[in-house]
Length: 429
Image: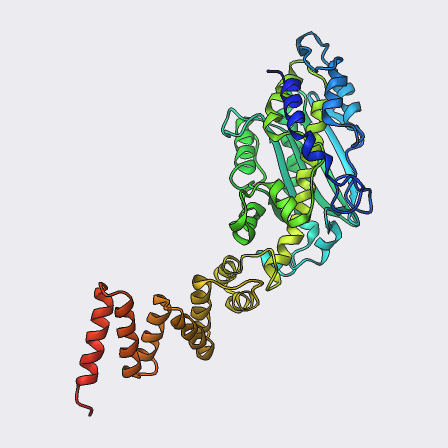
């Protein structure tokens, strides 16, 4: 099945869902202007559907024409379509400037400037100018030497703008030049930001650098992978943690007429064999949206991890992250101010934090609450506290007997009860 036929099939499935979507250009719509959501790439009006473009480029209403008879466009012609420049054989560069005042869904890019990035593990004095956002489009998802990143998009903050660079291969011969060029952007950056880049994009790029015998720019490069931060804080109630899911749930950003990710490898393969440039342009727009989402998502996640009680956050997961970073009091604040009711696991974790911080009154209050709910772990913690801290062996014995009534087969509870009985039976000095 050709690319156009597969896109036509997808278009038919999605037509009904699209009819009810907001196309007014408000913040949150993908069609908003410069003061809200960044506009679509300039090479094609956003209102023209992907299928209409495919029909035009194939010259027929069914989009089924074989590309093998088409004369392959020169790099200069492809660059003209993409509003870019040929900077080496088989390599096109596209540079754009996006105002920081623009919106991405319900998040303004400018929020990044005042975001509490330290909540995500960055240094307090980290500058947003040192951040570099990365995304690639590849010939497959397997990784390794058989997968080629044919499009790399990077973004950095410069003044009041996001400078966005894309490097697009029109053939295999341009790979070395692409890697040399992106090196000059990546090497001086202070922090890399990606979505699943630690597992996919960066290892793949390192492999490609080694294959062409070039030094890669990722050695000792701090890397913030937003997939992991998103999954920990918010993914517990989601069907998946794909970037587009995070866009919709956290940013209020919905893509209009986006090129399907699973068709990208086939589309580039057909382009290299002489296919039309429009699918490549649509992929470039998809790639650009990915990177701009990283900018907005970083600002949103910083807020989620920094502000206790955020409605999108799983309080326990966020608290665990803060504890690993040595910020126990931040963890306590997130759990105490949780937007929802804490389950037993979260309450036990909070009580443990209070005890470690020598806040015994707060820990005892939680354990007593758990005791009322017959929580074995809570009652056990209370029994240990009275045995070893208050030395009130009578209270500890009563709790041990309560535990044994809840779990009669437990040897541990029986041993605790017997030990406490023996200690109480000893003559007092």
